[in-house]
Amino acid sequence: MQKVRPRMACKLGKTGIAALLFWAATGCTAIDSGLGDVPGADQPFPNLASVPERPIGYSTAAERGALQDRLALDRAAAAPLGSASAGTSAAPQPDGGEETVELPLTGIDERDIAGGGWLNEKLPQKPARALAGLVFFDNGSAELKPKGRDVLRALAALQRDKGGVLRLVGHASSVSTASDPAERAEINDRVARRRVEAAAAELRRLGLAADQIQLAATGAEAPAYDEATPLGEAGNRRVEIYLEL
Image 1 (cartoon, one colour):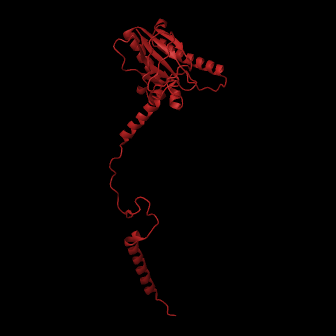
Image 2 (cartoon, one colour; image 1 turned 135 degrees about the horizontal axis):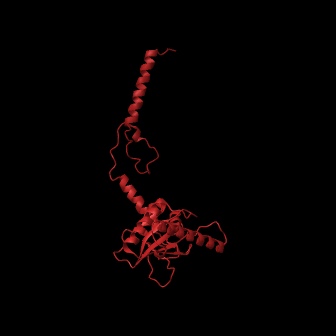
Image 3 (cartoon, rainbow, N blue to C red; image 1 turned 90 degrees about the vertical axis):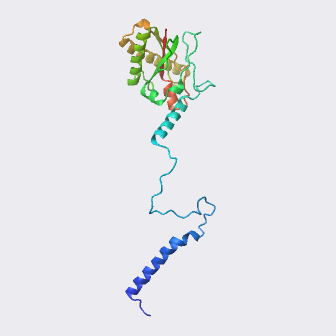
């Protein structure tokens, strides 16, 4: 048997590789890959040596952030428990017989709730009774957060400017470790009272007199948010503050 010289073997190898590359570049698209029914299978393979053009119609970081904010508002504005309406909820009336006030849920998002407070910047010039602000709390806590203190500071200044009374109404979420309904209601009433007293103590520290503050607490009896989500539950751990002239 005649032996192939090394130089000849190398030459044959190069020729085979060149033929293989030519076949891959020109003939591989004609082979039946079994993907005929797959959308886009009839298109040529992309050239990995080139950079594709920048996609058209992609969203910017600001647009994605705005979309996230709108989704947060949608979650926060979910229909309250026991209510067929969405986006608003009637605030509790401790004295009864007064005109109901609706919480502007679509103007409050998770940043306000997580930060600990929301200030109503659209109060009418001469409000007879208006929701002036909200203070939010962590689960089981009555400790004011920094933004909650800022809201109370702004409301104390508002009362000094307009006069009248700040009515505080404390709330709790319905979530509790107690299995007995009566015990759970007692716990929620107690934490709601502690929250409203903490807010009142801060207002007094800021210079308001005792007769300029009125307190009430409803426990978990008046949820403003659907508690199917953690955000809704957090939104119900609040103190509502009304300005009454």
